[in-house]
Length: 124
Image (cartoon, rainbow, N blue to C red; front, side):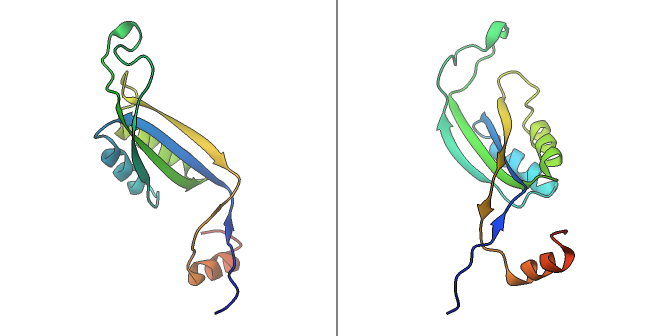
């Protein structure tokens, strides 16, 4: 067995979307349709003022789904916009999204993909 090697990925961002329970599948599909490779979804319980949202009096459910998607920096705007629209986040009480820059990440990358990246200088 050969020496193990870590392939470090840079120029990545983490998109986090916290939404009402039952919306994550729609958001994940929208992100994948514009190029995201996958998503991690987990459940959470909201804390704080949850009976009413501002003066609008909109009821906000405490059960949440959190969608995390790692994308390259050149995909951030496209995926973020798609997720926002799919989740109806322009509606009061539907959720919040934010982007966190990542310094580095590592995962398995097939050798043929690494070779292609080396030949093209990291370009797709």
